[in-house]
Image (cartoon, rainbow, N blue to C red; front, side, top):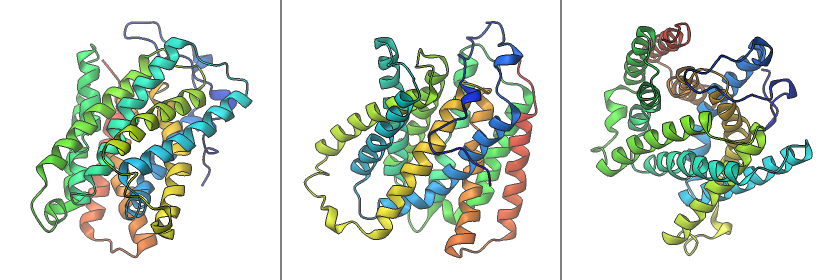
Length: 323
């Protein structure tokens, strides 16, 4: 499979700013090619779907917030170095503030909240309560972009597909749903959606690599603070980290951060919001397929039906125009 080099988008697609509502559309010459858009979606769909396994292994022996902090700090420093080596100018103060806000919303709150919650609830519950597409469409609606009928139908189909995919037993797991984890999942989805829209319109560096790297660095600083406040440093011993956790941690850096997150930030600045949000429907399907292919988990007709419904949801969202 063709993919984007970790953290590096092709030079031909250095994105221009996404216009504010009501602004003139960008000229055709500044629009990215279909090939690059497809590669970016493939990176988000496939790599983020595969990070479910990476997270599960990493947090077995690495504290949640410390894992996220070190992951994003290392990944961010590398991306900033790559961007600087490619000639990206150092951001202005306003751009640094924007990157800090985005890093706080997306990573320190949005991502880490989901990771923390998945240590307390079944994965099916997490899949159902990560409601990012709904939040994104609602927030865009508040901004004056009313969703089309196809988008609404797609959101409903996507929710139905995820419900079919996880099934009632997987949703509740072996016990009751932890109410705090459920609140954190819904809240994290809202903050992730807010951060996603913020990156779409905020004055961030023109280089998507520089912008992504800075967001990770600022997010890691916040997570380091949380890790220290919750005592994770005192109870962490590197020698006790298992090989599986190290592999999962490394996988999250390369594919979750460098490939997936960079591609997602680029998509948020170059395609309609609801299109970029379709990853939340596709990722669980990818995770189930990879679980079957790698971990030997069984596939059932229910999974096949869910996949068909979810594909229909994505098609309904992406093939309809905007008001």
